Length: 239
Ligand code: GLP
Image 1 (cartoon, helix red, strand yellow):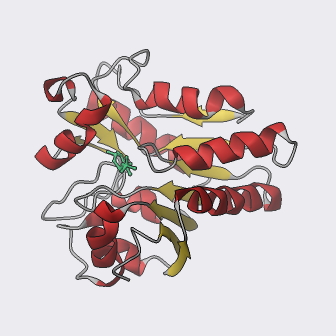
Image 2 (image 1 turned 45 degrees about the vertical axis):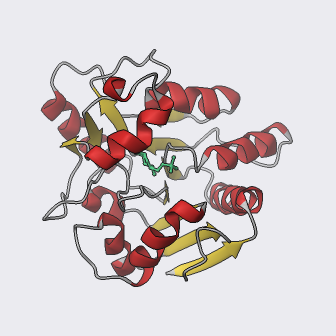
């Protein structure tokens, strides 16, 4: 694992966007894996800025998002579909975008279909990740095994509480989601994980040097051959 420490969130976002820009410049037809949450918003902002300046071109890029609540209307402003459009896709020229369908009639079929689409793309070149307070990546929640493929998941109580800030009430947070599995994520050639703020310091330490256990899904990243972690001073203070 390569660890990069930046002084603050702004510097972290710039560094992360620069890594993604370099990836797309090296391979204009890159397949990117993208993430939601508050942590990557600065990265998207920076990438939009770069795009508007002509420093990056996504015309041949495909993008696969990690996860989506289920069920949820795409038009709901809490859906990850809506988030990605607002934060990124409507500002840039990404050729093909994929997000698990929170409106699918059959979640099991949607999981299978999503996994197939990722495989058919030729595989993810660079996967961007955040990390949940409980160590989740995507919506791979603490469990007694590592779920391999894209799957339907019941969200942890702690995740529902953490994500309630995006909803009017905690009771409005969907209880389920569709997420890429650990194998889906692990097949990415490169992984770029971002963590910001003091609240992530302990889980970041566990991810980097704790026991590899499905109780902390992020810990499996210790075994991936090409992981870069960018932390700000607060999130990296226990490293
Ligand atoms: C969400 C997403 C994750 C994200 C995490 C952290 O629930 N499913 O992909 O990494 O929570 O979010 P934040 O960046 O807001 O701390």
